[in-house]
Image (cartoon, rainbow, N blue to C red; front, side):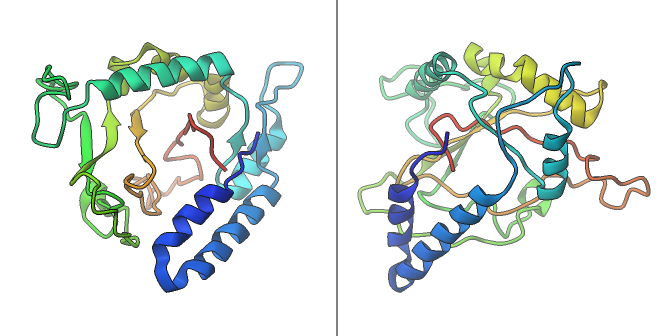
Amino acid sequence: MTIDASKSIEACAKYYGDEEAAMRDYLIAGEAQALALDNRGPIRFDEDGNIDPAILDAYARHGFYIFESVLDDAELEEIKHDLDAMRDKFPTGPDSEVNHRGEKALGVGNKALNLVWSKPLGDPLGGTSLANGRHEIKMFEPEAKSDTPAAAPFILLGSLQFSEACLRVYGHPDLLKVTEAVNGKDFAPFNEALFIKDPGIGAAVSWHQDGVTHWDNPDFDQDIHGFNFMAQVYGST
């Protein structure tokens, strides 16, 4: 199912001032091109339980594949419930250890970093050496409204320890079959994160390629760095 992105396109374009019309046209054209690609649909298997080779072929040609309706409405509601519960425990700001009720905030006292913050509508990774410098270009950072908070939640790391619903997604049998088809039977999950992009304040993630270790490997192949699954909880083009 493809959502109607027209309101999102209009809202985004308005941040570009004199370039508003050009940005609107760019986004509309990009959406049309994306929808015209042959890399979208449900997960399909043959009679032997193997993933449809047409899916793997389209993934190899385009570099990504959009699986539709993998999570049903009940699963999405469970995830949204857990997301709301986690957000209710977020600290009130980057330097706070309590949530909005004055209670100990999510992740406080944990050994590893959990919640990453950004200035509203910022691009905290682009053009920096963070994450091994793989976000090479700094994206345009629109001015947020004057009444927005000074910092906005950007990434929640280690989310599986806080949400059984998210954990179940990572163990989804159809997704594991897709993973096996790409990586082979000997694979291991590497990382999990929730990207938080609230309307009007959510930060951007500049274009990048995640793999940073094997570009010069003499046995390089297109799957050497593995791949990401990205579940869009609230709809996506």
